Image (cartoon, rainbow over all chains, first blue to last red; front, side, top):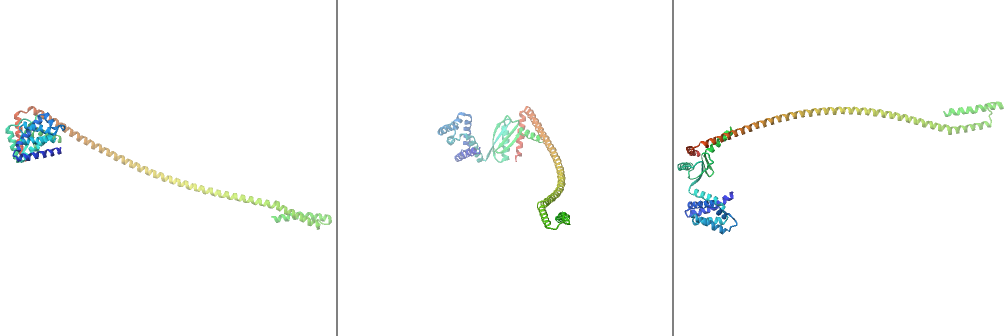
Length: 181
Length: 188
């Protein structure tokens, strides 16, 4: 797993250096996200790019075509073609995550994954982002996801930092206190 | 003894001859050539008797005396040996008796010591078992309490979850989110 993440970081760093050089680091990140969405939705495309018995140049052509279809620039097409040719298409989610991390760090911002029992209102999102920015001294991008298994409230994660504002967390702590007596 | 026998034989030979001589020629013994021959005859007879009868008899008697003496000595030695062996046996018997007494005393002492050790070991084992049982009991009680607490807490939380899930409305969700956002200040 660590080797896989290391490989993804090397690819992401190379792409980030090139994209920042051309001043399109964030736009490249968005295009990568769109390509990843296509990969996730299209099982046949995913299989074609990850099968080792398919010729590398064919994998490269398919990857470049997908990138072109979503409107990816030449850099994104070449990068995805290279990744597919080298047989690293299955690393793409880790590469995109590492790339987003590099872009966020470069722009002085952090990404918070928020799981909420019900969808947060825009006002709540702004309030939460403002609070987190004030607490951490960084611009915060919220990536919200509704999790129906949660009873109430939300859980926000920024890297290794976890803020548990859910009823589930409170009940869990209450359960521990009761069990300890 | 030999000398007495010779004198007796001489008297027996001389006296009849002297008497015969006095009857025939005026005395009991005629001192003539026949007397001399008789004396020689007597001497020869005496020599033969001594040589053939008396000396072997004496030798036999001496041998018998020696044998009897030897037997007596042997009997005496055997009696002494028997006495010595009896005394030796008595001494051995006494020593064996004393040794048996010592062994018995030692065995009794060892048995008493072994019994004491066994009793002490049994007491220690019993105490250990009691302590172990007590410890296990206490551990079981602790475990049972903990399990009971865990079950009670699980049950309470499960019931609370159901009640909360059933009763939560949108304004409750909003309030919970607002409370959680308010607590973010405490991150620092």
